[in-house]
Image 1 (cartoon, rainbow, N blue to C red):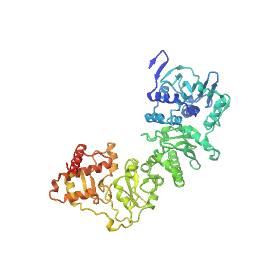
Image 2 (tube, rainbow, N blue to C red):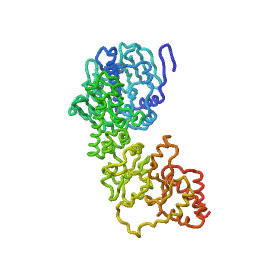
Image 3 (cartoon, one colour):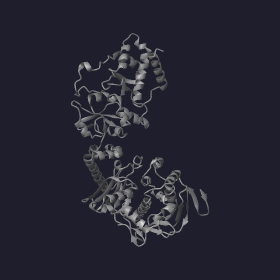
Image 4 (cartoon, helix red, strand yellow):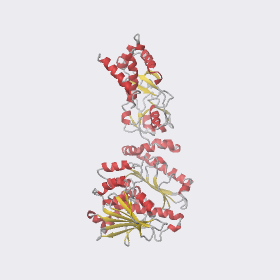
Length: 620
């Protein structure tokens, strides 16, 4: 930082510099959306001051809230002014010098990789102000924070640095002045500006003025009857509200009248927001009371598992004077939360039932988040489970639990599943072999949350949910086409081999036994009945919540050629001191670990033993 008597110069945060290089150095066919972003920011500033003035009347502006536009064609400038909350020196540093959000690196990488709709990514990440540099060679921000006397001028050409110095402004608010690039002079044209406001900002609830003219309807969109609102108007309100550029996947506009009145206008995005998996799990649905903005992050307005929603909830029955802290324990808000949550789940159920293919795209984006409700919301657990969809080994791309039950084989008593980190890898697991041979469908659970809701839901429609990587696989009762006895593979007697392996591996394994689940692979590892499932153990170890897991059971395929040969060798005299059997026991155990994505217990010994066995095979 260099400092003169009054003017200070700062360098942008590294990520901001990278962002500005992308924005300022690119040409866009839809550059006009910069104005939507700046008008939206001005509207938000007015909303914030209107809320603050509820408890401090001295903050109220002398004139009605509005966003004013000013054009100077000769000078090539465009200004956007508001009489909202304004900023002080610290706010300018924090808001216009950094990107104060997690996932910044991923956001920048996404911008670099994206060939189109980069403006949408900028808006979605909440840094729409920087889109001004698409059209401006210099941006000046004159601002004064409500309740304070100092005014400030922030200025930058978007090339790595910005300055802040004292300024003059008669009242609270902000004016953003764009010094337009030569190829962007069209944005100082009145007709062009009128068209942009009509296209993108018609729904802004504060007047947007150009001279004496108000360019928009200036009414809250959600207060209008849904039949009077076009699909495009809904889409533009969604983009304004969430700073997004995609079209909403689904729109839910509902008005509830009765003992508790409220209106909700909610949107399901068609893309994952960048902060979807942030640890804070914030809601982004705005709370209004009688069209007065209260908060964007009210914790108890919607459950965390619905945090992908965007939009507004407007209540006529909450108190305008209630503080944000008091809201958290307001029983009326709790009732609104319940009613809105049920309505959303009901709407999603309709989509899942009537438009399964379209619902699959929603599930791909937000299914992992929605399933968090199976753990956190016991009251609505059944409703959530109805709309959950799962990958499986069956013919269906995604299936519900009820559809799975309808397809169960005669004699099948359980809903079988396998859990891991990648559905494609799970589909190739050796644990599935016996189930595939019997035509038994297995669900593929590949989201981290799956292991946790399975602790709360252990059966569905009277059928237990059973992991195929835990306990014995008893498929004898499942009816299937009878295979002629002569075509069935011969099973080797493994008793001697099992005895040798048990001695060799010792406490490394809990047990060694013949497998009923393997048809092609020689070995697999499973958790014993009553022990923690393999995938849950893996997750807890990764997060430092478990040091050592329970020993697992090693299952041997009695029809596999390698196992049969080893079984024959184990019957010979001196098998207990046979180096080949000793090496084979450890190699089989490590092979089973590798198939599950784990490493050999001792990589160096594994390599030595493998080399030794190969040398024997080649007669070396």
